[in-house]
Image (cartoon, rainbow, N blue to C red; front, side, top):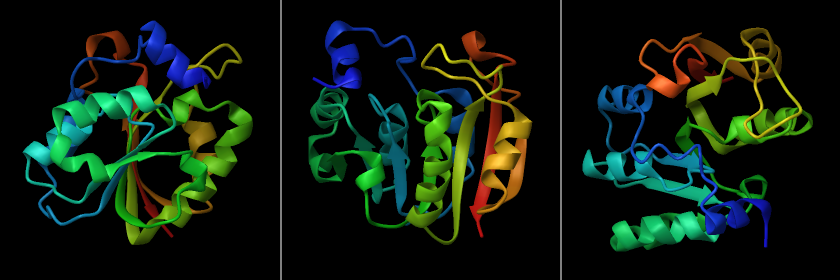
Length: 188
């Protein structure tokens, strides 16, 4: 059983907030094109997915390496079962207009982060955006979650993305207050 599936099976899901978090909700609320093709990688229980569907977005996909959270989404939204991808993110081979980042990046050890950036750039259509939240606390070897900083993110993403927004999230949920950065990166 893989690490993430085991965490779900044991109920060790401290990152699961039980609903969409405020920064992503407010970002989604300002999106006007409900035809966007959207990916949520490592989405866990996929509250962002539910919210997008409820807002009229129909071209939304979730990928997760763990089966349990995908089954949880499927139970809530059975009509969207074909939008749930049980696979390794790094094996995905299609493109999107928008990729939403919540807690996927912070779960990757620092050695995998350059691979994440390259893969994200390859999954986005021209002018496609990667948007969401990144943690803003010192990088550790203990985790996940692993931390990161503005400097690290600028160094990692600047070659393949135009940095549109990278700022302290003003609307984080209480346990993550002053520990998150909201970002919008556009693929070059």
